[in-house]
Image (cartoon, rainbow, N blue to C red; front, side):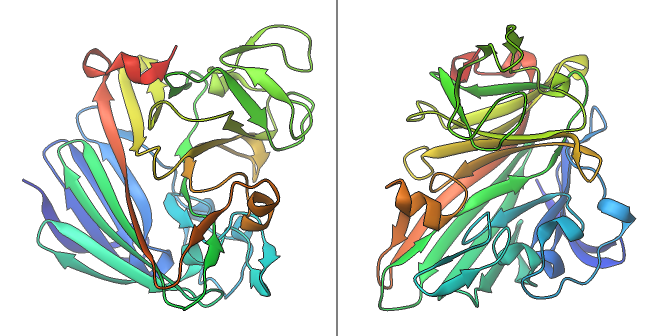
Length: 319
């Protein structure tokens, strides 16, 4: 059984979902942000507190990097700021910075927001069942024209020195999309997990906590996804934090890592996405765009799940 209650979190109205083994905190005023997801038996928390310890009021079209940069939210209708079909789309999209309409519905919390930059409405229903947090989405086109968009999950998980990244079974290569002296230029391709980046020596890319310090990186799984699952492994706790989704509906998977290059923070984001790579304009140029038809509605679900190592379905991952 899950208990749903209202509380205060860092001075903001919050919804709290709590089972016998997990706890989640949602902030409707700040993008329906998942501000906390903790595994109670181990005491492990998925997310760091907000940058600076507080949540500032966010003006319209604000740059994401200037605000709390914590928790898990949604990037819609873009990741990078861009223009498409005459509309200007803000940095990291619009919905992370907006106040959502939200209410408890039995053992779930439901929220929705209508975008201003495009005629779209995003709905999300969040449920907690034991160690699994399920986020059920519905995206609606409110216009009589087709709309190109990009949705991606944006969970800024804590990154520790021994954190391991597990990508879906069948992953053989990744493609870099962010220039660095480690993974090279955008478009450079590396085998997974053992790669020979620019340093000309073999490196295990699954050792996310050991990437060069003071940098940030972004890459995508190259080609189609065989499984809709990726995870972080925490060896000391024999614990995994899994991100599960339907690759038929979210066919792309990005990973962003900061080892201190972004606001001196150590973070890792596992980002299932509707399109490749970081804006609908770029996706259109690559013929990988996601399009919602006139008055069309699209649904998908993403789950975050704490899993003990001995209960992991190991065939879901590339080792």
